[in-house]
Image (cartoon, rainbow, N blue to C red; front, side, top):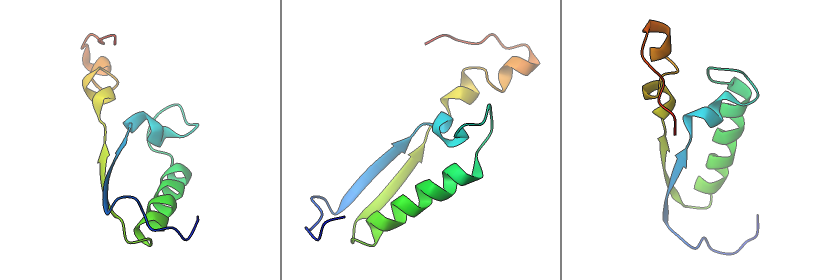
Length: 75
């Protein structure tokens, strides 16, 4: 990263829950989480406050509910 001052003091990072799967077919991929945490930590070392929101839409659209008979919605 450059030595320039950050453009913002606070940021909101919205991650898709699906992004946490990495290359896996389902669940949360540990290597993906570690990489994301390292990148977020790098930003915080610049003095930026980071709020992280992780989406859970797949749960409500039927990834989990499909196994109990819930119809999956289409986007």
